[in-house]
Length: 266
Image 1 (cartoon, rainbow, N blue to C red):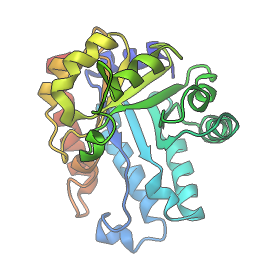
Image 2 (image 1 turned 120 degrees about the vertical axis):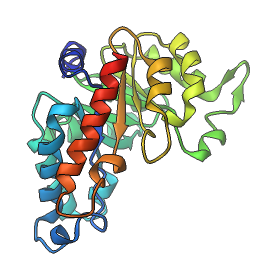
Image 3 (image 1 turned 180 degrees about the vertical axis):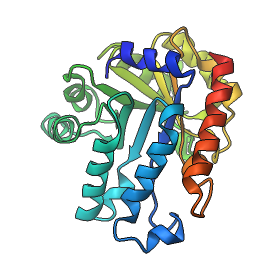
């Protein structure tokens, strides 16, 4: 999915919501824990319920890889179930020397039909460039994350810049706003004003709204640009809105609430 198609979906739906399918087998409703294909059935129901209210889905691959072959198969079926109208993100945080990154890119962009993948930039340009070689695919690079450990490296000074600022400026030169996004955590709301000055045109993937305490209002006011420029991810707040058989209905309600609020900011 290219940038034009993504922006069109945002404007059409009045939403920049990304639903995170971080599906934990121990947290799905009890009736599905007994189902032989419970995880996929859970994902399918969540997708069906939220499809009209979001523009993207983010699959955190760790939750599927932890189950071995079965989990990988569920992930593949899930990404294939998501329609092409929605940006499909593999939250895999890959990044390695060039030939290895090339294989990661092939795995998620060719073998699996993802539109985007999260990438760790620590090893530098040759670990990121293989992902950027794919037309109409997105490389989403870790910028400033919402975890407490961000202060260990990301918020350390490198001369006049923080390390995360150096990452944003350097990585931006490897691609363009058409194929590069950056992860910026919602709990870092005050930094968004500065980040928008550094990268006025790029999209940001923003986790941390909802269960992690980030404010949608603050993020939207500080981070949006003319194309919206943000995808706000909500996972637990939506997919675990209910632990009962009405889980999909409740997920739809929460997704609608996000959509309604986002429509006020667009």
